[in-house]
Length: 437
Image 1 (cartoon, one colour):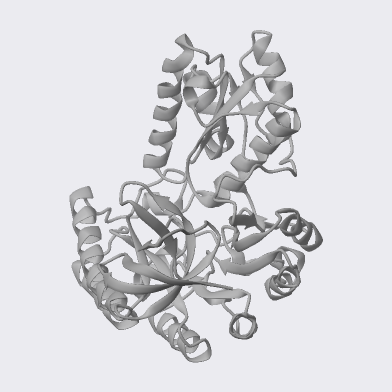
Image 2 (cartoon, one colour):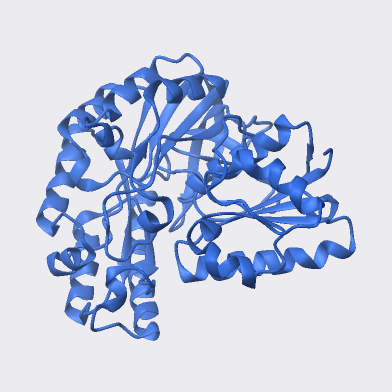
């Protein structure tokens, strides 16, 4: 089969890596890949199923893709988390899909398509393997390395263990070889549902060892850590981040709430006091470290007083970056049955209040950089703003703010000294002074 393939990628960066493996399988078979859906003969929709809104978006994407069948489009492949969890309901209902694959079924794609072109609708969930080859979909200087799949934290609001199963660390040697195979990489972003538990399913936490092995690779310039659970940010990990020049002084630590009663209902192991103590330790041991986190507003039975306490926690913790989400009531999770479900309008009001509070904190933090010079990695050109766009170390790709800057010329993946002229609540603006080695 020498068809032209396209892909619609939805969901998180772990899902992005799964999609890149599907694209790698397509490339391995010698087929062309296009980013123009109108030119695709086979379209893969790589879905997310974490929240109800994500499931709705995925289904709408498949239905929307079906409108291209009057042109070149011949087959639609529905892949990822949605078929993985809901194939029983999905296969008979979503008739627009010709082939269905789970999160680890990249190698099943072409056998399933052979059957689809013979006239079948094919459920190939759980019939393949992930595949090793990848087609990178990020800017060439920035790549993701998924170090584990699944989760055994069992937070009461979360579907991930039901979708992706128990935590499974990928072999250390395999990850080091994959990192080597990615070629020259300015920033390698380590991801998993919980990166900090790497190796624990084998009896021993090996995250620090993995970081040290990847740091030895000449093709990897910097390593960024996302999705670090607070109770597993160990002294050994803190020391490694502090001493290792290749590790970006940045941690993404999803806390989800600050109040002990809500944390207990969520199935989280930490407490407000422990979170504040961890932040103090990080900022003492790693001066200048940037900490990003996420919070859920409107969890069942959350009171106005607990919401106000979370607002106060933001003021005390002073995070560099935050994301906020309204609680989504997900069937097949323990929190679904909890009493005291908060009305949608209240949840949205609380999310807006949290964003307003963090906006003031972020604006004050960013204002400190006005009149200073920062090292900024160029990610490319922002054509709407007619300038270059990049990131300082405290900004992760795709989730935090950016640095917009002017220069006679700049190259993606290069680092520049940028004089910061001004700041707003999310972004910085400046002018290049020189390229840095």
